[in-house]
Length: 408
Image 1 (cartoon, one colour):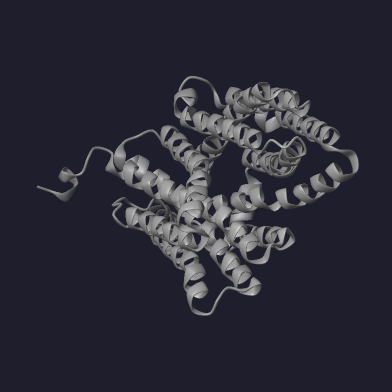
Image 2 (cartoon, helix red, strand yellow):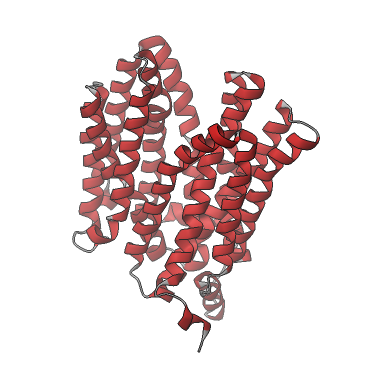
């Protein structure tokens, strides 16, 4: 009897999603534990904000390099290595605390180093999706939806798990749990036995005499040369720059002003729940309607949901609009993944996904700064309305571009 006969059906999907979910929960726990640790030890919100801003930079700078590594060193190898290094980096917090003691500089250094490994692991798992779909005989659209859905669920439960751990075992010991989750993520990929479409594609291209330029800039050029992917990538950059400040600056300020922190949690949870549901439903939706129509539904649904939110209605209505906003945008990421997998040669998937990850992280920090200044000078209502209008105008502009008017 072969080893594969002892495994449950579609075990490749299960192993990949265990890795995806474990890594997502581990990262979301770290996301809230680091600022909590800083506030415990320094009582400095300014330093906590500085660390948050600086740790966002590695995703911008390292993501293209991580994508290059995925295409040149192997998908599974990079995924396993990134998660093991993430485990080591978060373990450094308690190790340093119990040996030398944590200082502001050591906290900042460990946080930045740890953030450098996440993009490579995230990109590697996205490239493995095509290999798992082939091995498990599952449609790629369906698997992309499942993958993004589980990531969304991880970011729903992760912060709550982190908060419980901080209150029960303390912030320092919470990092051990995150380290364990990253080890589980690495072990799951190590047990995954699938091919590597990237290596196969590269060998085929070379055998056919095609030029296989593996420079770091190839990912940027490949993405830019595809008009549809270029438009959608620019759109997600602008939408992220406009929307994420709403979630991280405008809504927290509003709920703090009315002294209702639980309301903020409910709205964010409604958004996340809608997004996860939309992602899970992508495979079912894409089998029934054209992608051109789906993109229209995503952009129009997002604009129709965010506008009523800008008027800050009563909490039940705000939560309902937030849920539909998340539901509208939920299929966007799996749709982008499917388009990259279909339109780009497999040996360039890592580099293109890496560039897209960098795009997604590049604009929001500037948007957050500008939103914060606007809230201080013009107030929450005016800022929210302006951002909602900007998001709606961007959506309409994208819908009018030539690549989105054609079939694909």
